[in-house]
Image (cartoon, rainbow, N blue to C red; front, side):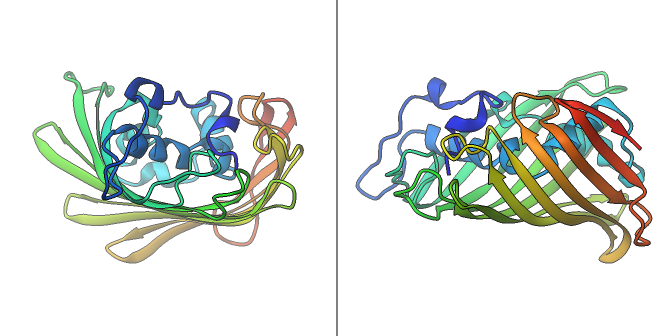
Length: 290
């Protein structure tokens, strides 16, 4: 899978600023760039299914699926949607960090990363300093094929102090891409956010799976056909509170913003089997919400 070079500069590569990566005899990266770059590569919007499309639409219009009422979501979403290239990151790598096919994904490695960034929030007079710390495991499906799939699993804790309160939330994700550019890909994603507010434990889980067929195997993530289904769920103190089902049939196009030019993303907001909210694309980055 051409994970790094096909993103069309959607994320600025920190590697250029950090230099190249070398290894000591124990296989641990002595330069910080490898760990930081690994985080970048696995968070590229192009490989998140319809996540990037939905996020871009949400940033432009009121696409309220009900989760805005969950305490703490507004601040968390601003932090989570901040591109990793904007953070000040460092890290270490262990395991087999070799990358024979040069696609940006190591053979089988684990990275420990610490990042920091200051945020300006509406209604908060002073900047909020946020620390992001955690680990990431990545594994190339075939390190001799730059278009092969990959596996990634990450766990991060975000910590900050706001209005005199120490706040933290945990983000965990797992991505599994199988296939290659010529035959197409299948994928399974799971994403979890967990935090505490006023003594209550909240958790939002996003799972989705599907397939992706590139238009051009030589540039697989420039454009292609995406098909997927999934759901968002909110839990309070371990008990289910709400669920939104989703399904998407999209033609993705990285020359567009949002990155689709035809197709739909549909949501069953009331969890009653009726898809009652739809994003329909009518052209390159052009859409309407019904």
